[in-house]
Amino acid sequence: MKILLSDYLFDGERLLKDKAVVVDNGVVVDIDGFKIIKKAYPEVKIEEFSGGVLFPGFVNTHVHLELGYLKGKTVRSKGFVEWLKSIMGSKLEDEDVIKDSIKNGIDELLKSGVGLVGDISNTLLSVEYLDKYMPQSVVFYENYSLNKKKACSVVEKLKKERLTAKSVRVSVVLHAVYSTHPCLAEFICSLDHTPFTVHLLESRFENQFLRNSGKLFDFLESIGLVSDRFYFDDVWDFLKNTSCLKRNAIFVHCVEATDRDIEKIKELKGTVCLCLRSNDFISSKLPDVYKICASGVNVAFGTDSLASNDNLNFLEELRFAHKAFPLIEAEKIFKWAISGGAKALNTKWGFFKGYSCRPFFIPSSIYSPLIYILEEKGEDPLIINA
Image (cartoon, rainbow, N blue to C red):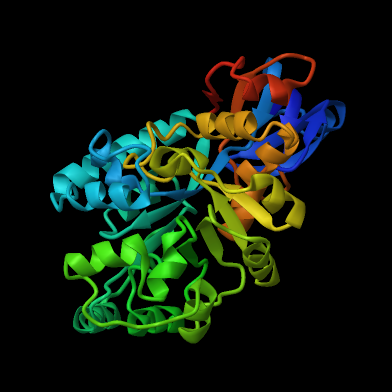
């Protein structure tokens, strides 16, 4: 057990001053003014950090750890379809390569202050590593197939699989509306696994695809992946007719989200997960974060994968958001990065009594410490053993 003390403390939602937190094996025992804490826990060791902010650990709500080997192998800024072509031509099934990607990715995330992730996995190889290094994380077991026969075989496989993990949660999900046959989507959503996530409106081609038109549809049909046509008005029509309109779901990217789309997410009490550097990498286009913020919907951050990002440094993700959308308050950006992600993953995380944390400290200025950090003046996170 330790008492952690700093000039500033960010509890996950707000920046606080003159507060101390008592942590025991990654669980918050108490939080209050330092004098009160010191009097209540006279025998507990005090670890003091001066000139900066103490954080409970970031939450990376959307990452593909197993795709780390794709770094440098995909095209940048040429649009979604060209990027998809490059990723499909570079994917491997070598377990040793994938495991190395997972281990290296976790190391990088931990160094940048991440303590909890929502990992997208096609192989489930990340489960054992996250069990060990990031317990309480969620592994989203992603399945897809546009071919009806293959989709049915995936359904049969899922019926037989027994998904087990020590501490992480495993949730079966679909990838996106343009990669999943309706029969497979309907089965996956009937499992009622939570939390639930789906890539949504990452490009303007998604709604076109569902109407059997557009550049994405033409490409997937040309390589033989669209062998059984189906028609829906838009992404919401697809999700509704496959029983995939899940409450509290995580909708990732939302680059092309309109007011109507954001309102739909809000009605479902869902989360918009921003992966801004990934969007910039693929198409140089970003979602309207000001509009998303004004809607009041829950917001979280993800780094996506090294197939569409230069690194998995989570702090760089927040700094990019601050630079791209400077009118959003620094406190809100850090709230999205911690409590927004924790809410999305349905996990009690932060400097709140009884909640879990992985504390770290970032040196900063006395004045406007959060802005100072986001403007890339702060140093790398100092991870604390607590």
